[in-house]
Length: 308
Image 1 (cartoon, rainbow, N blue to C red):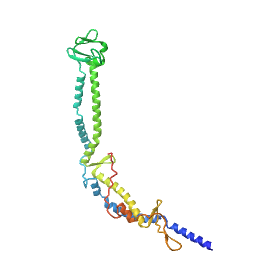
Image 2 (cartoon, helix red, strand yellow):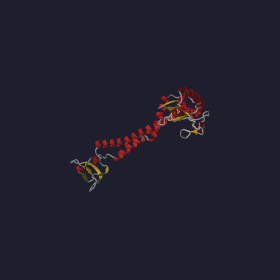
Image 3 (cartoon, helix red, strand yellow):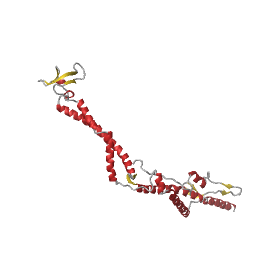
Image 4 (tube, rainbow, N blue to C red):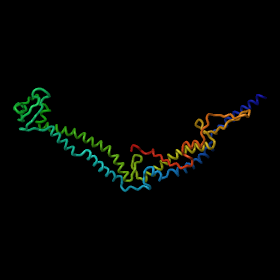
């Protein structure tokens, strides 16, 4: 009989300890979440308004409607960019390169005073005098010196052969203009997005999802996104606060009834269960600096496209 009583007492103790950590029921959660939803709706309506979002984005409220179409702006943009590109890389550079080419590779004619290097080093590496044409052996005659055919290389003949001179001039100018045109293209590519953003903003358009939209559409989209983000944040905070207010604590990812302790059999003292006690609802909300019913003028603009 004594053993039976002991078993009964242990069973009662076990049942009591389990029932003290019951999980939140579907009905309890539904009732609390409904209250939270009402509180969140109120917080969103107070803290995320078109006026507040417009101020956070430095937009005029209400925003002005654009007076020009995007097609018109693109034509203006082309003129603006072309003007800036021409200013940095003027067309006159082409004439400068041509002038330099003719100076570097002059085509001599009979009677001209010339100085030509016919070999890298050694005696008569450089010859000077009047160009007298080509003798019967096909050798250049400069002053009293006849240049041997072995020294009549392309680098020498470019100054005396018209066809060879034209090829050399063309190649030289093309090489110089290649870098000129490449620099223009690179500069235009970098300049266009910056000028487009400046022009479109000044005309009442703003970047949104890789395209430009009118200011009123931009504000409407911004408000929608801001409300969604703010609602998500407030739901988590107010939901947790309300759960704790109703006596629940979070353990192992689940909300259970808060444990207040078990009474010992000798009735002398309470036996506390669990680890350190969690902060109260008031402490939690205070630490978040976001009171349940207090206006929170928060606007999260992290959704804007930084690459645009």
